Length: 406
View (cartoon, rainbow, N blue to C red):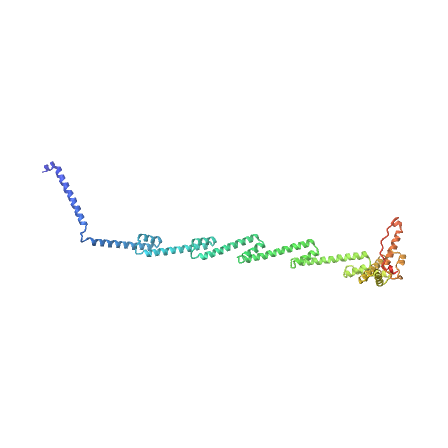
């Protein structure tokens, strides 16, 4: 048989292959039949599958929600919403997201405000307003910006005023920032500058007064700076100048009296300088001249002479006479007498006898002086060795006031 099989290999192998294919097909059919339920068993299996799927989804939802709550971030809740758009916690997740966003906004607001306050500048508060226009501190930030802007302007104005350092600059600051941070100091600076300006003006005025050195200059200083630093000294200088002026006037009046050399001149000096340096000597000189004059110059009633002369002038020229006219005549008579007394040594005894006559009608010192001077001058012209050979010009003489009475 073995040999027979060896002789027929192809037929046997073909039969075996056929049997193997049939077995495979039958197995596949059996597996297929077993995997498909029967008509009576299919609905129950689907419900079980659906319930199992729903349970698995719920479990996944709860787990995702638990994870999101555990994380507690906007990203976690957002991921939950994306993965479970119809989950049991969608509404709550949305609320959590809103709450977290609001909390984040508030936190950012507070941080920005803290940063702005830390910086404390108008720029920082302005940036806060720009980023959080409706923030919790927006109104306060605007107020701070206003205050800081005013403060910055205040500080700049003060810095400018200090840099200028003038009364005008500090005055302008107080006018523009009447409630500024430096108003009190500005007023102090103004007071100090005013005081310094007053002192400077005081010193300049005093220097000018000292340079001029006159009573008028020192008086002007005292009038302008009644409480100045040099008022006492100015008054001392004025007193010294007044004393010096009084002494100078005294000396000049005395020199004039000595030059005149008449009793009237010495009497005038005494009347004007009752406590002058030469009063005693003036009284002695005047008394001596009066005594000598009474001895050498006869006395006449000049009051009578002047009254008569005034009446004669009215008769000749008309009009009326006045007390002033009489006083002028009396003054002329007294001066003429003083001159006669002073120059009496220059007159000869013969001329005195001829000119000074009391027995004539209304004698006059003016006439006597005119006569004496003419006689003296004529005698001088009669001396060629002293005055030369001539010709000579006669001097002018004073007109007599009582010629018409002779």
